[in-house]
Each structure stands twice: as C-alpha cells, then as structure tokens.
Length: 468
Image (cartoon, rainbow, N blue to C red; front, side, top):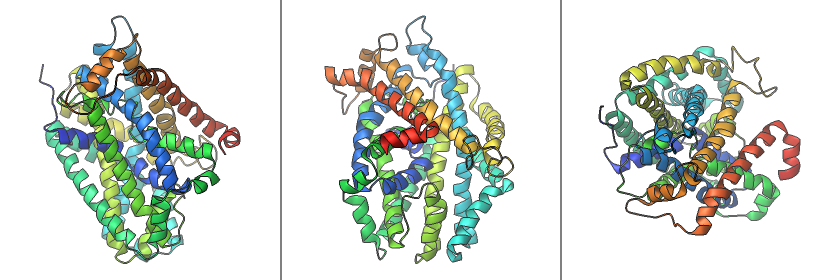
C-alpha cells in the first residue's frame, strides 16, 4: 500500500485546519450577529461558549482522526469495539460534505465575482445605494453568472487538492492564509482611522450588557451558543481528516486551542473592519447577509480609496472561501482514497463532474428555479441545503463524535483522553467534573442547539415567546 501523506510542518496543519473553520459564513456572520446582539457584550458570551462547546468537540474530531490515522472512511472501523456499527456514520458525514459543497461553491463564486467587479470593472464605487442593491439582485438573477462562478470555485478548489497534500493543500493554504491576515490587518487600520469610526470601536470593544439585554438575554445566549458551535465546522469529518495527517509530537489540546484562536482572530478582525466602517457612514451593522453585498459596497463607494479597499476586502473573502473549499474537498477526496484505494487525480476528476452537477440546483435557485421556495416565500434552494447542513448534520455529527469518544460502547473516554494528551503542550485535565461534563452535559447542550434550531425555523412564534 502506498504510504499515507502527512503535513510537511505543524504550521501547515494549524493553518489548513483553521482555514476550514474560517469560512465566509463565519466571516460575514460574526460581524452582523455581533451588531445585532449588542456588540462587545455578545463577544464575551460567544467566547465563553467557544471554550466550553466548540473546543472539546473539536478535540474529539481531531482525536478520532489522529487515533485512527485515517479520515472518516476508515476511522470508526479502526477504533470501534468489535461487532459495533459506529462506522455507518461515515455515509451521512460524507453526504454532509457533499451537501455543504452543493451551496458553498455557489456562494464562493459570489466572492470571486465581487472581487472581479471591484478590482477590474470599478463601477460599484460610483453607484448609488439603489444601484448597488440592484447589482446584487442582478448577479443572483443571472444563471450564467451563478453557474460560471460555481464552476470556477469547484475547479479551482479541486485543482489545488489534485496537487497533493503538501504541494497543493498545505503550500497554497499557507500562502492564502498569510495574505488573508495581511489584508485584514491593513483594512482594519484603514477603517479605524475613518472619521466617525470611534463610535463603532466603542460599540465593538466596550461591553454594554444593558444593550445586550434589550435584545433578549435568551436570544443572545442562543445566538452566541450557535455561533461558537458552528464556527469550527465540526461534525462531518472535515476536521478529522487533518487530525489523521499529523504526528503525536504535540497534544491535541494545544492544537485545538491554536485553531480556535486563529478562527477567533479572523472573525474579530472581520468585525473590526465591518462594524466601525458602518458607524463611520451611519449604516446599521446588524443587517444580516446583505451586510457584505449591499451595505459594505455602499461604504466603499463613500470611502477614500474605496475601490482599492473594496477589492482588497473581497479578495480576503475569496481567500476565506477558497481555504474552506480546499479543506472540505480534501476530506472528500481522502474519503474515496481511503475507502476504495483510488488515486488522488482520479478521485479529483470524478468529483469535479459530480460536484458541478450537484451544485446546479443552488446556482439556479435564484433564477431558473426561483419558484422553488422550501420554507415559504423568500426562501430558496440554498436555504434548504444550508439548513440541512448547519442545523441538522453538523450538530448531530458533533454529538456523534463526542459520544463515540466518551462512552464505553464506543472508543471510550480513557483512550480519548490519552490521545488528546499525547505529545508536548497543554493537557486536558482528567478530573471527574470535566470527564462528566464532556461525556454527559456537552452532548445534551448540542442536542439543545439542534432542537432549538428546528423550533426557530418551524415554530418562530414559539421561539420568540421563549427567547424573545
């Protein structure tokens, strides 16, 4: 059997794992929910839940990967007790990866399109607010634009994966992530020097729990729990695969903390760019996904050197999108390599065709298939696919990883803790309270997030009555 690939460096592992977590949903979602739920006070609540929810779940997924030396195609087969059926989970998990790519490729295409429009067309900086809103609607309504952007995202992401783990995934992700941080820091410095940005900084950096209470404590807490949980993309094996590529020189506790810190730094920098910019031009920072595609182009249209700043901003978003594409595509490709022994380039070629076909409903959901409204008026194919991944497969998959690692009918807590603590660096304390929390309380919290997500979607009046 051909020797399994590994990362050339520890930095490569940290950056690609962080790149998987640092997606465009996180980058645009973190600023607008921070704006919506009270600013700095919300961030403190979010960080608390990131530590108690996201971090241990991430360690569980890393541990399964490193403990087995394989991705989800074989990891449960290797680690599960003889005669059990934990390995059946590989199929809904890989389905989740495909489902994620069925809409993420289309949304990534939006980033590439806006970067092209800002950098090479340059018409948005002279447009009126109404024209900017119409431009976004026009992009969604154009089937050729949507399909073309999706194909570019698919071919580019899988093309990088086809080069191999070290020469493609690791090397190019290092380059992209380095540029991403440079662009974000430069943009943050530019924005906070704008007249009027000080009020935005105050909102973003100085906690005001009274402002948070105005939004409803229950709603704020649940939003913070959801953001802390979903930000790391845990539950469909996209983190487990990278655990399988690293050695045991460093503890997984240390590595998981590093990934969480990088993910949080990028989300924080995104907010540091977006929220003060909105305050500087008297625009609301809590407007939802339209914040990136309508509100921010309006900001750049009014900002000195706005075209350069806008192009840099959408280039950074393009890198964030591409880093996630590459990470999830690597998980998909590794799945078929591990399961069937296929060559990397053969798997890549087959998946370019498969993912383009599977992604067509989302790309056409805003135009040709606009009449399909799965959740009622205003919804589309993307909403259905996103809900199935974010509100169903991610929480259930995460709960599965945590239970598998901690109950005696699975891998077992002793083996899990030993794997997490093997290597130099920070250790996960093996005291009774923490072991009880991870084994029993954490799965219940994840189940709560899953249940409330469904209530919020299908019984909004009941949700508002409880959390509003």
